[in-house]
Length: 312
Image (cartoon, rainbow, N blue to C red; front, side, top):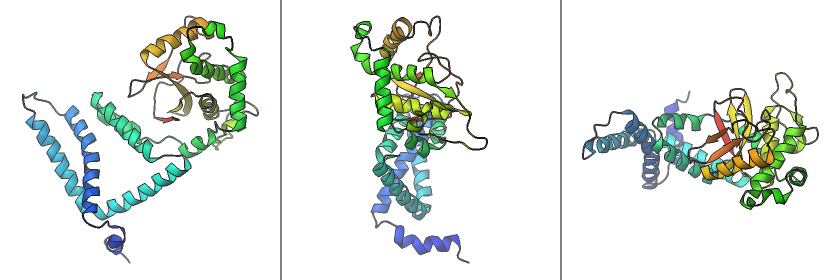
């Protein structure tokens, strides 16, 4: 029987990069791993606050050397894994799923957040948590389907089309149009459970037939409608629930949007109610659009976030 060691030896020459390229790949991977681990160690180890941070320099060097030794030992396996991962990213880039840019953007975002977070390890855990049925959900958000686009356009002419009320808020035209999509879906949505034992995922264009389905069907339709009129939606995965949010922007944007919700667009629905939102690692504000909310920013069904899926 061929041993694992024999299997690796058999394919070593086939998958190994010619020197010094393998050393360069290993070193770059080392840097990518060392930085987040150093941030975690830096935040969790006691800092003596010396005038010259020799302890932090030594800590970085120790982590760097440790990873270099480990990666050298596992070099062949790692090269094979990197090669496979690059193929997956190439397919994702071609077919519009998880692409090279998304990897770069997620890594940059994670680094930015970890620097400001007292518990940076929690950021890594949250990034590694999977979003259920991610590929199916992305395909289901068919915002470019003519049926979805036409529905979204009709919602913007049906709700909040009186420009006179929007005087001075032209900058938030897209946000107002997204709220029109929210209002139309909220008015017509009928919650229906999936068949028992079967997690059925309906596309947005399919849900338009009856405006019925469970929470993930609603979230998919809402995300597609918001995306179809130029908004930026995302889906939030909690314990046994998925709901949509839309990007608002900065704190200043939030203040203006709250005025629109409470004083112009959803005056009765939001009367004496709080506006609920999340602030992401970049300081951007996302407003709740769940089917349980009667106005944008309604109360969350669940505060816990196990994963998120953003449609840029």
